[in-house]
Length: 306
Ligand SMILES: Nc1ncnc2c1ncn2[C@@H]1O[C@H](COP(=O)(O)OP(=O)(O)OP(=O)(O)O)[C@@H](O)[C@H]1O
Ligand SMILES: [Mg+2]
Image (cartoon, rainbow, N blue to C red; front, side, top):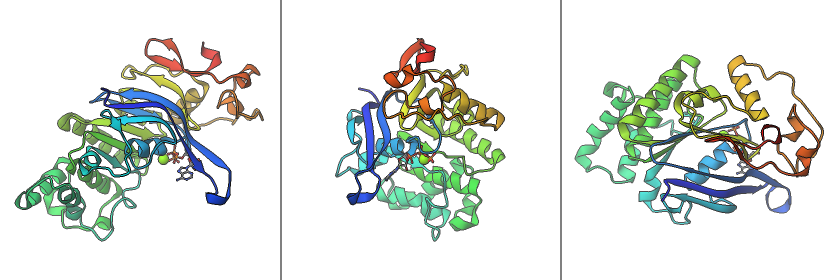
């Protein structure tokens, strides 16, 4: 049994509510599996379906088609047992939006302990202090309200809250992108240490390839809901090959997206990146490139590389 398994998962939203037939394909035919203890990075530009994928993995919404299993069971169930809910937790990009501003740090971390009944009443207080210290927030700060903390401190508190549930999987949705660069590095280091200390598995979502390279073992690159490239081992920083991935990497390294290419073609059929690809040729519209192995553990969905 895989820890996490996606088979041809798609998610389609109705764009304009009940009275519109327009549909948005947020996630399209995604398949991959993940082992316990791995850190899988998912990268892609805004709107590529990363958060949608994260929410489906958390069981917050069902796939439209395909199969999504967490520890051998469908990730989404109409009535989700608290025990299953506990096992996967999410850390969001904007910690101010993700927390109740009336709460103190103590209350933020205490909530899941009570909800999941993980400690007896007398043990809750020392456990909250312990969790806060695990993320570098001194117990003396526990009474301070959410709004009194900096973005980086509050993200630490949100991580402590996620850990309070004693999860096996953390879905980290852009966990550092709202933070200053120096604070980002501290949070990434903290996440690295916590993963070892608590035997966690991470699904790390980011639009920044450098963040993924720092923390993740494996990488999936998405464009408009489609997986265009997969690397099973990024610890040795292999070069990406899909034209979209190359563009993403350059953007992360040089802060420069260069001139945007517009081929003015309809990508309803064929390659999803055909409209913006510098290597576009008419064959790209005739069929959809499937992910193909270009090297062991490295798959690319592009006719140029195969
Ligand atoms: N509940 C929803 N109803 C309708 N459309 C949605 C819904 N959620 C997401 N979408 C659409 O699905 C697509 C993918 O959105 P998603 O939020 O998953 O992207 P993302 O990769 O997380 O982007 P970002 O980097 O901006 O967070 C977008 O076009 C978005 O507008
Ligand atoms: Mg998102």
